[in-house]
Image (cartoon, rainbow, N blue to C red; front, side):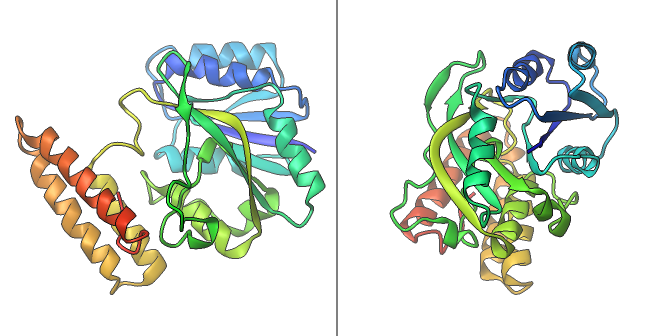
Length: 279
């Protein structure tokens, strides 16, 4: 059972070697790694080229794209595997049997189309910090994906038919993975497993963790996609996004105020079991 992994990259030379090495070390040999680079100006391409020359399972499939979502879409469009997934260039697999665990999960459960494992947050050097805890609310579950898309992306894999039915929406730049997983969960069967297999590196520039108005406005569009143009959840997030945008223009207090907004919005989301959306 071949596994196809897309790796989008853009000026992450300091991390991509670790990412690709973790894939090369997998004990599941039937693997292809499809790297889509957005035009890196650092040493990323030299590192990628070394892997491609050393191991025929690694291929650089693109040197130009319109962002991370487009890079993943381009890479997977040429995939030959039965199982798909993607690792950002700053992600990595924690153990050599990560992909064999994924394959075994699919083989043992032919009725399941998407599997999601656990992982660890890691520091810039790749050392484990703490486990990723996604189900910290007692009412949270995959069945409530429309209220909170809590998925560890580098530890989630799906059958080819999911990608054939659910396109990656390249108009989203910050939350395209949440949109993809939401649409996949609505149409296909999904199962979670507790084994930690992926490392999510924290380095200060993670797109999904920053308090940015652009990301919050995308979250508002995501709410519209789920609940319609008149969605109160979308309107609420547009107000939050506007407040953050004002804070972004404040050179001294802006960062502090954005943090307060982040804590306030997510505390309210937790207290309402995500009936009020978080950021």
